[in-house]
Image 1 (spheres, rainbow, N blue to C red):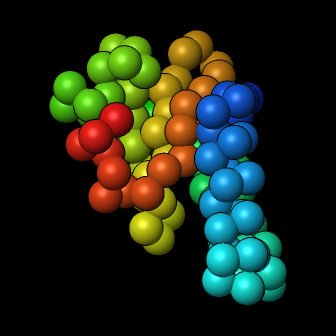
Image 2: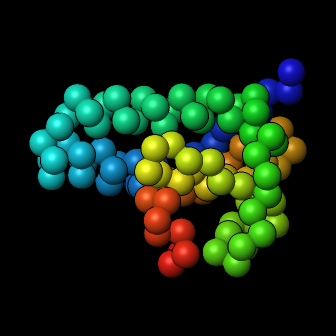
Image 3: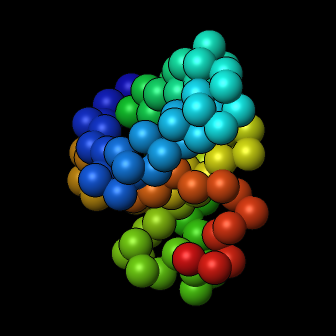
Length: 102
């Protein structure tokens, strides 16, 4: 089985911080924030061995991330990433319904 290194961009790290802060402070649910982020990191781990099984996106909204950008959802969040050689680059973790406006 092919394993990939997973690299999380600064933008994606900020997205995760913003998501966590929103759940913890706006919704006052710190336990839910922890569980939600654990779920997202579980997807990152899954991508380390299955990243290329997701189809490449062809929509214009994804072209700014490169020619082989892919998307996988976790609940209501879209994880946008690309695979280059043996590396998965996580570009963004954003609400799935905001993809059109990227």
